[in-house]
Length: 443
Image (tube, rainbow, N blue to C red; front, top):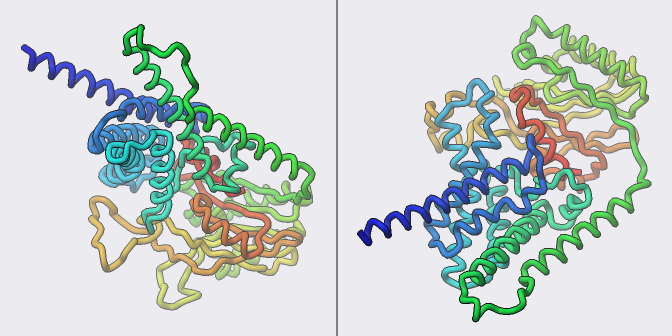
């Protein structure tokens, strides 16, 4: 009888902890686009912190993994819109991304059990350490939807990233979550004490005071920075979006209609007299650098509009190296107002598996996971493109989520960052909005 009661109690506690962890994952989902309720990020980890309190490292890992899986399922559903994406690949990718929260739960529980350090000291530091590691693990690096990026709509808070990177904002958010969780845990312990032994006064936890001071400081710093640049010089740049369906894009029968659409949009944008007009990633239906007919058409448009045109193109790599036959560069090509090619940038950070095969010859990737690899080649040169009064640093597709790459481009003289991307793969899902939220931090 007592054994049955004990099992029911243990089962009830485990279920409660599991529900709390999944609730944290759900709040994280709501903190990012499409829901975009960034304020929820400041409390999203509280249920999980309550669930792992007093637990061992393995329990912390399991509960963190539950929260991570719930978060991934809600945020990355759009990956299934890619026709060639396999179920097993999705399961593995989702489990890998969920390890961020799982390892954090394990680390918090392990450190606190061994060292008895305050939760407010351990949780934010471990979160940032795991978040940084997730962003710097070779071809598996994926700084996608880091916790600080949930605040992309807060212009004042975003300014903190100029000092600490997005990880500083993540630290601040976890600290606030920890302070709230600690206050709830302290209140619970106090309520369980006999009335006669309770302290008469309830003091604010030090973690809450420190968190409040840091948040206020971050807002004040952001307001000062914004005020400083309120009257900064501006340059007019136009962007055009043809909204070409993915199934039409590489069909040669639609080549002329695609060029006509971008020509119409470019002429319309040129009436506003911008310094430069930008087309999306691989907007030109062919290799504009090595296809004379395509090059002449885009060059003529540049001369007609008397402006710089920065256009996306898939470039045959064999023209730069005979050994790269059947390979491509993902490029952005700058046409000067006189129709001459003023420069080009080739994508450096390719998407693993989708655009290239990682560790070729060393790892035999199962075809049940990856049925085919892209045939793109990465470049090695940082290229700055001069467009009148601006020096353009171009990034393509997901390169914009890698701060180290963009930082290096700026060090080399770029004063305008242009990201060209094609999100037609994902249709009307959250993916384009999530990417836009992360791109805010490159500004």
